[in-house]
Amino acid sequence: MALFEVSHLSRSGMSDISFSLAASGLVCLSGPSGSGKTLLLRALADLDVSDGRVSLAGTERQQFTPVHWRQQVGFLPAESCWWAPLVGDHFPAGQQALFAELGFGEDVSAWHVERLSSGERQRLALARLLVNQPAVLLLDEPTANLDPVNSKKVEHIVLSYLHTRAAVCLWVTHDVQQMERIADRILVLDGKGLCETAA
Amino acid sequence: MSNTSGMIHLSAFDLSLAALLVVALALSSVRIYPGLARQLLIAALRTAIQLTLVGLVLKVLFANSDLLWVTLISLAMLFVAGREVMARQHRRFAGRWGYSIGVISMFVSSFAVTLFALLVVVGNEPWYQPQYAIPLLGMLLGNTMTSISLALDRLTQSAWEQRAVIEARLVLGHSAQEAISDIQRQVFRSGLIPIINAMAAAGIVSLPGMMTGQILAGAEPVEAVKYQILIMFLITGGAGFGTMAAVHLAVHRLFDERQRLRLDRLKR
Image (tube, rainbow over all chains, first blue to last red):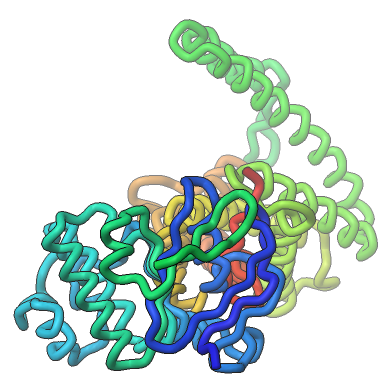
C-alpha cells in the first residue's frame, strides 16, 4: 500500500496532479524552472490553499491537525530560515545523538547561525526537520548551493533516515548524476502535468 | 485679546498670527521638500475648519444634554477614527476587515474605558454629560487610534517581510501563534511606545497638552494636573487594550483554519 497518496491536487499556478509514494522510497522530482515544483511541495505541506485529496498511511489530510500534518510531512525549503541567533535555539533540548550522527560536535548548539557555512546550514536545517521524525520528506533542491562533498553528506543523511524510518522522500533536483545516485523513481513536472520517466 | 474671569480670550487676529508660523514653514520647505508645503497647508486648514465646526457642535451639545446626541456624535468619531487607522496602513487587510479591525478594537477599548471613567471615576449626573463624555472619548480615541495604527502597520509589514521565517516555523510543526509570537511581541511594544514615552516624559520634558490647555484657560494647576494624570492612565488602558485587541484580531485574520499564512488577504 502507498504511504503517501496524492489525488487530483490542484492550486493556482499548477495543473491537476496525482501520484503515490511507497515506503522507504526516494522519488526525484525534476522539470523546467517555473513548472510548479515548489508550488507542489508547498501545497503538499499545506502551506498554500489547494484542492484535491492528500493522504498519509490511508488517513486524509483533513483528519490531521495542521501542526501534526506538518510534523509528519516535513518540507525543507530551498533557503533555510533561522529566527534566533544560536543553533541550539532552533532545536528541542537533548539532540546530541542527532548532531553526532550528522557529524557535528557537542558544542554545535552554541554556534551562531550567521557564522554557519552553507553546507552546515543545510545539514542543520535538515536535522531540524528530522527532529519531528516525519514520515514524508519534501526537499526543495536541498543540495543546490553545496559542493560535491557536502551534497553527498546530505544524500547520505536522507537515505539512511528513509531506510531506518521506512519514510518516503520527494526530492526536487536538476542534477542528473544525483538522480542516478539516489532515485528509485523520477517524476517530471512540466507545463502539461506530471509524468514518470525511467530511473 | 481680552481678559474675562481669569481666561484670556483669543481673537481671530491672534489665531492668524499663529497661522503665519505654519505659512512661513510651508514657504521655507517648498524648495527642499516639494509637495510637503501643500500637505502642511491642507492639514492646517483642516485643523482650523474641523475644530471650529466641532466647537460649534459642542456648544449646541453642551446646551442640551441628550444621550441620543452624545451616542450619535461618539459613533461618528469612532467611524472617522476607524477610517484613519485604515488609511495609515501601508499593507492593510483587504475588504471589510481593513476597516473593521480598527473600529472593533477602538470600540471595545475606548468606549469601555470612557464609560468606566464617566460612571466610576468622574461620577457626574447625568453620567453622559457631553462636557465630560465627548472630550474624554476624543482623547481616548485619538491616542488609541495612533497606537492601533502603528501596531497594525508594523504587524502586516513584518508578516510580509518575514514570511520565510514564519513559514520556516510552520513547516517544523509550530502553531501559527508560535510562528508569529516574536513579531507579535515587537508589534505590541511598538504600539505602546508613544504612550509609555508620554508618561515617562510628562511634567519633566513636556507639559501635556490637555493640562497646558486647562492652565491657559485659567484652571488651578493642581486641579489640571489631577485631570491630566487621570487622562494619562485612561489613555494607557484604552490604547493598551485596544492595541491588544487589534493585534489579536489581525493575527487571527493573517492565518486561516489550516494555520496557513494568508498574505493574499492583505492589499498589495
